[in-house]
Length: 252
Ligand code: NAP
Image (cartoon, rainbow, N blue to C red; front, side, top):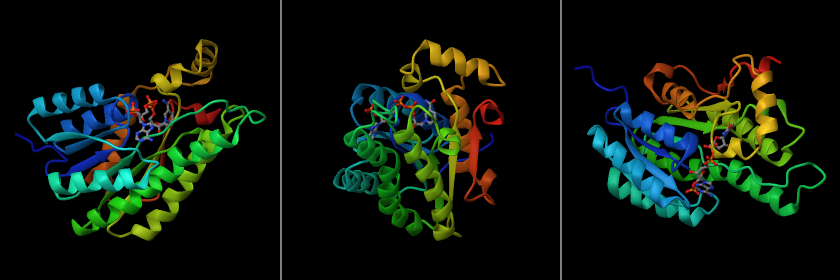
């Protein structure tokens, strides 16, 4: 029988209780990784995912509550992960949030600060905390979940897209800092069918689908496939890359 491509590796996926993070956790587990399913509020969903993974009888999974905007909470997660798995090899910075109001005139100081905290500072704090663990194990892979709108900008969600643009830039810089032991890449999804996208409303979704060359929203599993690629030896000579997963929308 062929060995799974991530057998023996341990991955932390932040914000893995639902949406894209859930699909990533399941995908990495299918390929044999031990998976830490991080969540903030959705404990029942996180438990469910852990059970699904453990039923696969490949890698082992645990769920860990933790807030990526809070360094003490991240350090607590790190201690639990160290005790359970002795470190990680793969960090997927997926946790993110699209707060409202976002229209440029209406963005409040709280929304601006919180948008940067969760979507940009959170990944940095996780990287600062978990890179020493990865180095102890001889290297690893970091995948930051940014957004296509972090490349194009958006007339509707500037606080969110400014943070995602920052995350792309951080990815490029850290790819240089952490080479040659650690590959650092980003994924820039377009519009993916999750609760975050559904909250944008039917009119927006219809317009987006009509403007997307592939004429549909993406699925969380399609983003997870890209994460698997960037987490595995299949991408061993790729670092500082932004992989766009958007059904061609960027071509417009
Ligand atoms: P989602 O369905 O809203 O899920 C967000 C996840 O993040 C949840 O698991 C949530 O955990 C977790 N989370 C939120 N705040 C957190 C915090 N402070 N600490 C730890 N976890 C936290 O979002 P999604 O659509 O799957 O998006 C996932 C990522 O992809 C985000 O970074 C998003 O910006 C990015 N993205 C999404 C799209 C899209 O079209 N959906 C497009 C481009 C980029 P709890 O449920 O436990 O609170």
